[in-house]
Image (cartoon, rainbow, N blue to C red; front, top):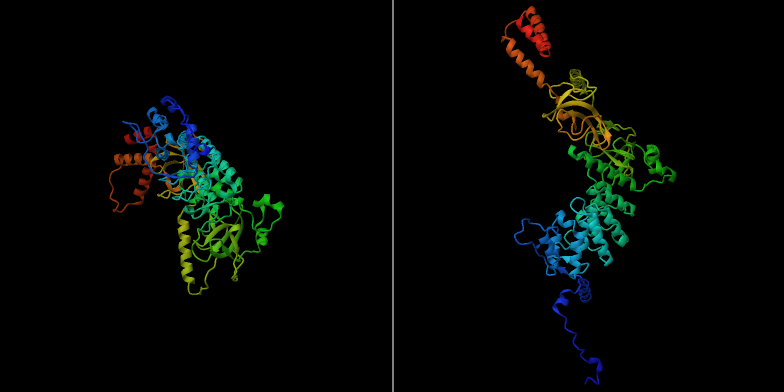
Length: 543
């Protein structure tokens, strides 16, 4: 039979290999055999992370010798290694390249998924590049290795609907964004994610204040005009710096820079000469409006379907570039035409809003409106309310006359003016001296700069490289006027002590003569003088 059909001859069995030779078979040979036998990726079942016996910690630490032995053990399964990667601790994420290499050695396909998270090794690698918890360099090493094995950049986790670029943008890893876009730029650059209202990677980075990721995406051609399901562009999803508290001053600065970066990246929608584009901030408002076919008083439509009347166009102090001020038809705005104490137009509260020029268009149903920036008010018979208006005006004038005008600072609860050089209490606890009052670059509004008596502050009088006053490190602090008040503790104690010792009780209901009043005023003036000079106080007591 074998002579007739020589092709069907059974080959002789291979020579037996000793157990020692079997153990020394290289991992690379085993990996190549597994890849040859399995061409398609699979989903690995969920498992728990293996830990050494009598281990003191609940997380896996590759730096520990016992954990390292488990990591290098060939009997440790791929699902168990995936469970190790899922632990969001620096010890694990800093070794992502070593753990990922061990997973590949055990025959894992480059596009295999973790059964619990539905994430691939490329997803985990981009997540491990997060600054602080992860290590961008280790994540970059593993990402390059996975891309060399033809890892699919466009694969998404079915739980988060995010691909590798979305993860790199979310965790602000521009190093990984560059290599991912180099491997698959057209497919994933402007891909959307349903978990972020179908926004792009640029939306994801902007909403998380990832400045490095936004710059990298814009450099590689990401579209800043794409809108999500809510009609928002990347600039619209940046958190508002005005809503951030004092302890988030650094984040507020990043938000301001990020929003302006995205607004500047949006191409102009008007036909302006190319030579004027570098000087966009210097374009007069009337030229900008005429190029758009608009004028003050026109009915306009915002991108979020809000309608209103155009009241202002020009540069502002709260942001660079050209802005328009709109008086809305409904009270869904943010101001009354003024921002940060600077008035740009006049309208009732909650009817004013500012928007970039690129966000408006001329309304189709044009209705007549005044060109001036006066607010819309209904017609009324002023003859019936003349007396009421005069009465209200008198009351306002009387209130203004009773209040003291402030050149610097503000009034504390007792109605006393706070000025530079005064002893104050910050938040009712910290004592110090006012060294600065005015506007700052780190947050809108007016702020007090206080030099504290104890090193319980946060700086030396400078914030983000801008110096407002000078003091020792950790002695400086900034506070809003509502948190600062004059410090009268020392003076009140002295007055209270002296009055209890030297002054007898008086009957205030009794009628006092002008001589008594004069005598009392003289005594009170001497008492205040003696509080500052104890030696004169002793002589006064003896007399």
